Amino acid sequence: MISYARQNSEQQPEVTPPLEDHIAPSPRVSVQAFCETVETAAAVQSAGEDRRLGKAHLKIQMGGMAAATEAYRTAPTPNVIILETEGRNEILIGLDQLATVCDSGTRVIVIGRINDVGLYRELVRRGVSDYVLAPVNALDVVRSICGLFSTPEAKAVGRIIAVVGAKGGVGASTIAHNVAWAIARDLALDSVVADLDLAFGTAGLDYNQDPAQGIADAVFSPDRVDTAFIDRLLSKCTDHLSLLAAPATLERVYDFGADAFDSIFDTLRTTMPCIVLDVPHQWAGWTKRALISADDILIVAAPDLANLRNTKNIFDLLKASRPNDRIPLYCLNQVGVPKRPEINFNEFAKAIETEPIATIPFEPQMFGSAANNGQMIAEIAANHRTTEMFLQIAQRLTGRGETKKPRGSFLSPLIKKLRTK
Image 1 (tube, helix red, strand yellow):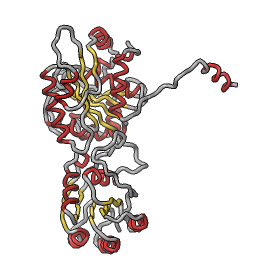
Image 2 (cartoon, rainbow, N blue to C red):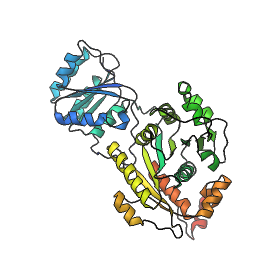
Image 3 (cartoon, rainbow, N blue to C red):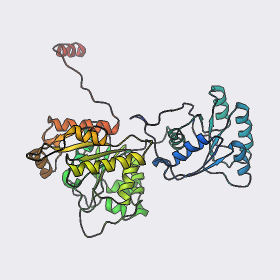
Image 4 (tube, one colour):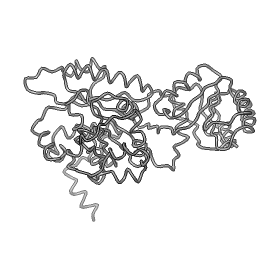
């Protein structure tokens, strides 16, 4: 029998997901698609290149249900089968034939052109996991496959936010730590900061933490990584904010493979709603993978030519590598340094072809005091405009709406007394 996994009859036509649409990555599964049209085959092929299906093994064949039934007479079925078909009777007859050769536990997604509730209910009764209306795009396929492994009862998969500097010394780590603070304190979202600069990371200093263990213990012991192990490595900063600190020592050489941090990120996703990656300014397989695999990306740049070039390069690469995701965001930092020639806001935005989400002024006294005291900007200057900027960045990256405070009036004290009585 084909096992039932999910009921979802709604078609989502958007290629670019809205801010609230969060699709959890698929686990390591095998997927085989049997298409009847080249358009659907192209959409499935494009979906296979999406970062959220990076662990899935996808194979595409033509021939629809008839080809699938014939193929599985002598071969075991994969974890997921995608079938394209036309016509009501053809769908039901084909499924009955497929059920005779389908292994138990295999999940089936049907792509059809009949928009009928009665047909959908009949498909569910036969054990179909999902029915998607054609024509489909890559994101429809990604959403359908990943949705099979994200049941409503399961804990929400955490959102990964990667923050990287376009150039060394632009304050990307400071921005990452303050934004994470705003996410945890102002948005009340349980968060963790993962400091990926193992040799020179500053998260421990900025949060005034000196944990004995941190992210190095996990990356050098991949076989031990699980939820309990990661929990022991976390350092508690506030009620909603934890830190996975870097050792910031030079006893070791920190050369990693491209997938060195995968198990750490996967484990953090299962326990934390929000993970902020403080990505160092270096270009290696694992940094590129961390950026491409993140749900949202913030590039921090200073207003000069080298930063403009690097921001443009990073922005274009990530946009091309993540065609079904929201485009990266960027902000300008250290703006207004005395006597320093700077590229103005409009020229920077014109070159990147999108405006920065924030322009943070150069405030050496405030930022220097916070860094030396191990504090956040919100702790030493709660009403400063930069503190508000960090909250706005946090809202954009997490997809949370603006937290509006109720407006008061001269009648508020009287109304309050009346309600009390």
